[in-house]
Length: 311
Image 1: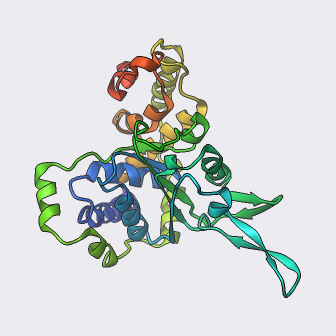
Image 2: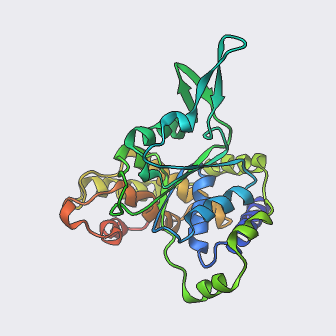
């Protein structure tokens, strides 16, 4: 491990440790979320209400020192409520663009699947190109720019399922899950999470985060590892388990996530275990079983991909 890799690891461990004081018993989820951000990806958190999805987004924004905005998605939310609109100024007789909450370094799209598909699609250009176009004029978004979206399970009342094109814009999908007994006891006996958030100090500045992001693509990936990744992609496309296989964009997302995970572990090269660690979070929301009436579990869907021979 080089000195620079060790320094980066110490900083990232500090972020995880500080965030773990508020998000109890969820270190693996925190590590995956940080991996996604380092790889310049957008994160989708899917779980039941009340398990800490929104708190996780707040914690990440504060520890990473990022400007933060939150939008509560509802059925009557309009695209202009997200991106902004041109306002007529009576005094000057001109229109002036008033930016919406999307013009922040980290945007929390809370309960994104409670908004209509038209409103959900307002995020597509921003997530792909880091800009929004209003009335034919493009407006760049801040750098870095991330979307962290939360959604409730699709079976809940008042939800609109995200289309495949929207899901594919998210590099990772993770779940929080219920805390274990020890973590829940600490949560019940401890201070209010919102009070702890107010006292949470950042571990980074946005400039330092951009430097770490620029380092991720430089993490070495051997030809054997690329063969391994391509074998996984090919198997997903040939398998009878799935309607469609993983796209080239999904392959790149797996690669960048594996490089980011390796950096989180303090290494300057990727090993097969890095790909295996990020694969469920990157691939599961992009794969759909053939039989919609008997959709297999994520573990069942991904099981054939884990059978690819490790180099």
